[in-house]
Image 1: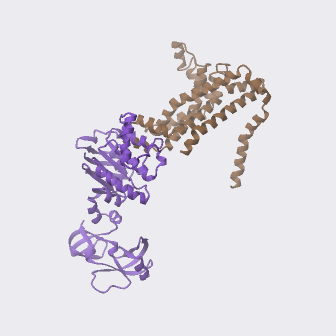
Image 2: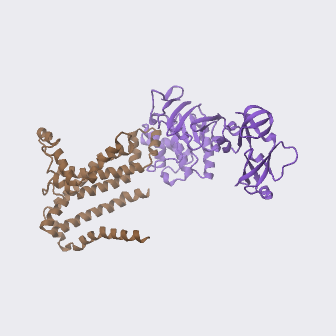
Image 3: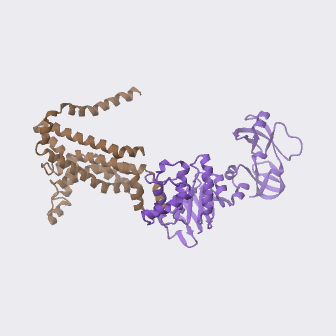
Amino acid sequence: MPAPLLVPALLAVAFLVLPLLGLVIRAPWSQIGPQLARPGVGEALRLSLVSATLATLISLVLGVPLAWVLARSRIRGRSVLRALVTVPLVLPPVVGGVALFLVIGRTGILGGPLYAHLGVTVPFTTTAVVIAETFVAMPFLVISVEGALRAADARFEDAAATLGADRWTTFRRVTLPLVAPGIAAGAVLCWARALGEFGATITFAGNFPGRTQTMPLAVYLALQRDPEAAIVLSLVLLAVSLATLLLLRDRWLGRGVAA
Amino acid sequence: MSLRAHVVVQRGSLAVDVEFAVADGEVLAVLGPNGAGKSTLLRVLAGLLPPDVGQVVVDGEQTWDSAERHVPAHQRSLGMVFQDHLLFPHLSVTENVAFGLRSRGARRAAARAAAAPWLERVGLTGLGDRRPGELSGGQAQRAALARALVGDPRVLLLDEPLSALDARTRLTVRAELHRHLADYAGSAVLVTHDPIDAMALADRVVVVEDGRVVQAGTPAEVARRPRTDYVARLVGLVLLPGTGSGQQVALDGGGAVAVAEDAAGPVFVAVRPESVALYLERPAGSPRNVWPARLVAATPHGSVVRCDLAGEVPLTADVTATSFAELGLAPGAAVWASVKASEVAVYTR
């Protein structure tokens, strides 16, 4: 291997791995039990897992069809649509939170009528957490599923059509199974992104323990008062992320790559 | 179950305009080089691509395509076999064969039961639970044929069904395909660039070049009397256009060929490479067709060496490897080429 490639590659590995190692080395291992038992920690973890999972489910239900439209339909303005959809990828999450506030806030474009007629307020609720996470994370799913759809041989869909399958049947029975590994990969990315969501959540949903305080918010708060607790909470998030990645890689992704 | 089609469609710079009819139980081969518009034609017949203009009518009454109507692929009674089988990789062989029945409303168990005899017919009994990835190329193409035929479609479309197979498998699958096509009651359209497939499987051949039909006829007619260079090369003939007068044909490219029968007006002269003899000296004696030529290329071709000649009359000669060596030929060598008038085929253009 040529040195101009090898050396930067090694530096990159060190850059990515050392912070995680630092986290593990500096962790107050003896304190982990008591820290985790503290009130609020379990709550924050549960809230994080539940809201990230809900955000992923919503992203799957809405994002897979969107990816199909982007990859397969011949509607006009598809590239504009794709650009719009992927804006949240590059948008600072805080801006996303502000934007959500302006639309679904109590005086927002949609939120105003919602409150006036139904008495529903979205901001600073668990619903707001899920919405913020979905807003930020869904593009990850859409992009990877669209990539998988583009890579999948569309002639299988032609074959299905010649066998009497309409487009919906073809989608369910041929396209979806063919891109399942891509969907799984997208869902993992989406879930991980939602789990780590900070900016949009704190802007749009606030930081209320038990209701909107997810793990990243708890870590941030703890770091100011009690750094040891912050490290422990970070370790938990790291462990959850790694466990998910390993589990899914063995279950779906690995087989998908081999097939 | 007949099929009548007139397809006009523009694909990039290629304008396809092809008209043909296929009778009940007939197999029509569409023969042509890559990029001639064959696959486009098949996609139109399948309903995967709407034609710009044209008609596809089945059984004389069911219009699949016309100015007012475009029946989408999934509503057409057809089966299609693709070059690289396109079996669904996530389904078992049985589920693949049953797919058409399932999507047309059959229950799972009924569809699987109906698929079983088809697996037997194509010689895949016992392999129904395998995934397509676990089949050999020949087995996969057999399964694809069963999948296409399982619903007794009115029209069977075959897109280069043998060209992805290795030479030996191709022989056996071709023979089996011949048998299944003979049993098939509907109209079959076979697209191929391989004249052997067309000759072996089809009742009739249309030759398509640059989106147009350039020749149509029985396989024997097309093989004996090609009308374009492409077909002539495929069937191993050298085709020389010219103008006949008596037993002499003045070639368009210059020079003349003596023929054994009377010819008049625009004609084709077809010469088989094995009927061309090469000499180092001008041969003495009777042959009327003797031309000086230069050897431009020599390629081994089985037990013969195929010699491309340049000269007044461009010819190709097949000489045995032994005589090639005895003559001491090498590219650039000056030779004399000779053909007996009785070995030359001549027919009107």
